[in-house]
Structures are given as C-alpha cells and as structure tokens.
Image (cartoon, rainbow, N blue to C red):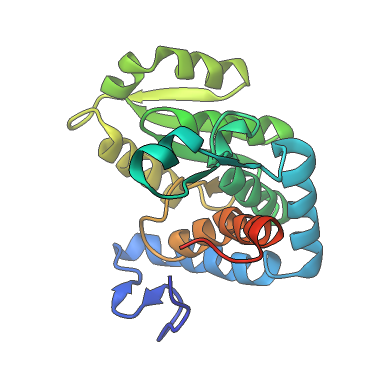
Length: 227
C-alpha cells in the first residue's frame, strides 16, 4: 500500500474518513494519539518486545515441497499459525492494546466474526489488565461456541448482537456506537484494514511485521526476495 497520501488515511483516491458527525471527534483524537505515541522509539521497542516475548515472533518460513512440486513453483509459507493464539490477529491486537494502555484507556471493545479477533483481543485485554467487551453477531456466536468460550475464559464479556441480520456488520455497528459514547475511557480495537481513518493505518502498521520479517528471512536464506 502506498504512502503517497494527500492527507492521513487517503491512499491515492481510496480510504479517508466519511462518518457521522458524532464520530469525527473520537476518530480525530484516536488519530492524534496514534501519531504521538505509536511513532516513538520507546513504543516501537515495547511493541517489538511484546511480539517476541508474548506472541512468539519471529515466525518461521516453511518450504512447501509437495505444493511446489505439484504446481511447478517454489512455494513457502509464513507460519503465522504458530503464534500464541493460533493466528496473525495477535500482532495488531498487541499494538493497539499497548497504544490504548499508553493513552490511559481502561477498556477495550472489538467486533468479531469467526472469533479469532475476539480471542486475540481478550488475550491482550488480560495481558494489559484492561476491561474487554466483544461484540459478536448471534449467528456467528452460535457457529463458533468454542471461540466464545475462549474469550470468556480470558475474562472478556461477549455480547451476542441480535439486531439486523445478527452478523458481523451488525456487531460493527453496535461497537461503533459504544465507542462514540465511551471514547474517554474506551479504545475500539478494529481487527482488519477496514473502516474510517485511522483504523486502516493502525492495522497496516502493526501487521507490517509479517512482511518485514519475511523479506529479511528470504534474504538470509536465498540472497534474494520472492516473486
């Protein structure tokens, strides 16, 4: 993704912030906190330590020999599944929870669909001793009872959303409403590169460790970068 932005959150005609007026101030305050806190050397060092000591980075690159032979290409896998929690979600959640802690927030909220982001949010909420509340569509919760159990096991409150279609989009709507009314003490931990600025920039920043790590590992192994 290009950094040639006309303004924060704009990516060559895409992105930006198009939200109801009630959301403008909370999002602007979050953007300012991200720029002031997450860009500092001290924050970056703490984030790196958390990735190594809690999440289990660096993750290895595994050569997929059978897949390579079948399709006539050298295929390697970046093993994010080996991280604590079993998915890449923990990278972003650690970064945002650390940011929330530094900004003096006392509470995390998040939306989740299949439940992996909710589990990772519950994990970092417990790590940083932050109250954690997860919004999950009732239909998703019914399909993913094990992940609901894992979230609650780690101390998170799971709210099963029944409004609308009772899915992920409805969980996002309820989470945004919560954030707008509780911005003083609450951080909304968005799980993907979606939504209004600064959420996409934040997730991109905290997940960029995957690509940076993979490039370095490939250079060490082959002396070159993959296609």
